[in-house]
Image: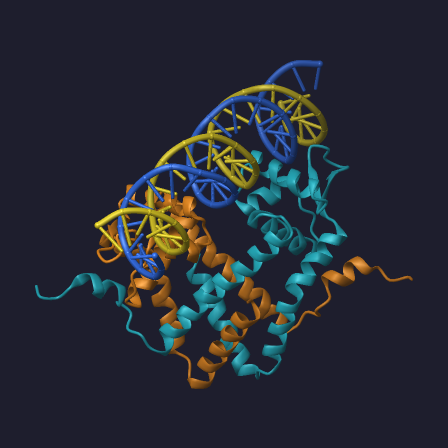
Length: 157
Length: 157
DNA sequence: TCTATTATCTCGCTCAGCAAGATTCTTGTT
DNA sequence: AACAAGAATCTTGCTGAGCGAGATAATAGA
């Protein structure tokens, strides 16, 4: 057995234009993560806190209320961790706890307007840049990007 | 002032084919993160441990040695955290500490072959799927994907 | 009303990561 | 050669995010 198997494993998929893009996608994921982390650190928050704000804003954009339990489930936290998370965010003034009037066991979490504005000031330019880039694309190019990303989502499940 | 400013902020960028793709990219980043997290949890590791393994394997693929200090810097850990990280990985048998022969202060970290194989068994299918997807694209479509991802990397700095 | 269930919170704990400093080795100076 | 300065890693003691178990409060069904 003259072959070295160790190297073989690492280089299994031969490099090519496809592998370059695979690495590029991974790099983008890492960079976006860093971009979020920077936002967190600048505002004295933790990565989980940012994920929470984004989750809350997404729900708000879709016109849905988010309860504490909902939020915890979305972030993969148990109830104790969720309480601590909401405590942190509330203490920092980023969210408000509001008792649900219909079911008084529930606590819906509302994002403070200033936290929304703060988020936009950080993520807005990134989004604007993305939209700019994509405006230069024709329908087939857009379909290619959409298809690749959609395919990767399905594969990553 | 009859307008409600709160809604305006959230909906600032008008929805369209571009925004759909922006959200898609973000979703992919989240899903890839979850995919890593699942790998971590299945093998009793923490997210940082997985990031460390990937960093180490990337360096190995590029033919570079990685010292403890290098690794810590790449992950944004201080020296104490780095020592703890390498302790965990070594205890789990995923890496080996090897004293550098030239500069005996340095400790280079080597990834165990079984950890490499384990990583491939989890991330390989995802990579294969990506390559499959991209093989169906012509040069202009590949350029579109590459251009979008590259642009987003630059914007996320 | 009484019980089962649901939603959140409290308490005590574990462990990743930090700050400060100790240890070990290298390099430049005298 | 010996010593000082600096570099790379490790040790110690601590903070705080998140977990498990169980308490509390509110709803829904019999």
